[in-house]
Image 1 (tube, each protein chain N blue to C red):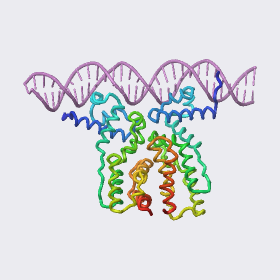
Image 2: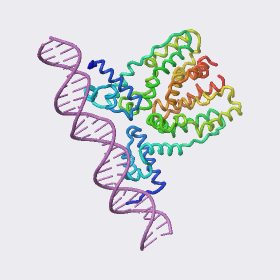
Image 3: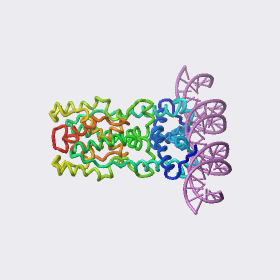
Image 4: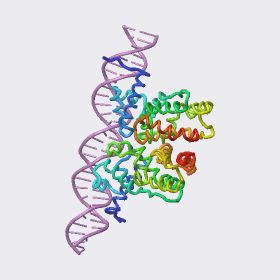
Length: 188
Length: 188
DNA sequence: TCCTTTGGATAGATTTGCCTATCTTATCTT
DNA sequence: AAGATAAGATAGGCAAATCTATCCAAAGGA
């Protein structure tokens, strides 16, 4: 019956349990006991690794961020590249985004992290590649590409997620790209 | 020394204290004791009016929402109308928006309220007037006015607030209106 | 196989916040 | 001026969560 987890495997199980607990109950209802119970272990196991609740939350967020890398698509068209990225974000990061913005007010003040850092795929430059390629293909007018416009579809996606707390329907993604983003970069 | 507050004045003072407490510490750290102390009164005074913490939070939000009405401007140009609305929101509702989105996860589940309802000035139709007038003046192409595009500047403003937790600089507001919104409704 | 390391169970001390009971005192009404 | 009403102080019971002390048991290494 024993079959005990140890070391890294145990640590991952604890952080996963903490993450589930965070998304289920939010920061307000987040208790060490609940994490212990969800992970099927006992308090000292938790306290040996993280001295208090805040340390555990920070480690949990860091752990999830590490695993949340998104790689940049290359479909051959800007429309599909942007939509692919948006769909990827939409399907994998809704919990992360809502949690970070909705539940973790205190987290920011301590760490200096900003929620903005959560969406740019692979840092702030990762997304630039798809615009460079689109410009080389002649799909867009490069002079239209301000930082704001490059960020626009992702900002709007993030906004939808933050206001609805749910994944965004695919036709909304297409509406954003086709009626807002593309007209701006193609110049009508 | 006494000079006791009573009735409506006391109630307002309590709700204001609760509001300050909410924005200062967030929902997680929001305690009845802290509100009592901040208001300079004692527990029974609070509990005679609101049976528990959740009721107080709900009453506080309702109280703030009541006082947060924004009226629709009529400057003669769409650009100024939109900018005026955005500036008004920017200067009066940053705390409200961040709090509602960042701290009050539990509030929504109970009340069914959605954060989206916080920005549309005077309900969802209030803002429509400025677009009607702009169309009558011939400033814009009415067929461009989808719901999404009408909401666009306000969605982007809300997004900025949610990501930075601070008022948005005026030049950012102008950038949004001049490089994103107006090109879309004027058709280039 | 022995022994060191580490996971896990249990119980409890401590803190903190919720909420109530009781009493005093100010203010309003008549 | 007297009585009714409501504010405010104080104290405390209760519940829940934090964190620790102590012990036992399993896994891995020598």
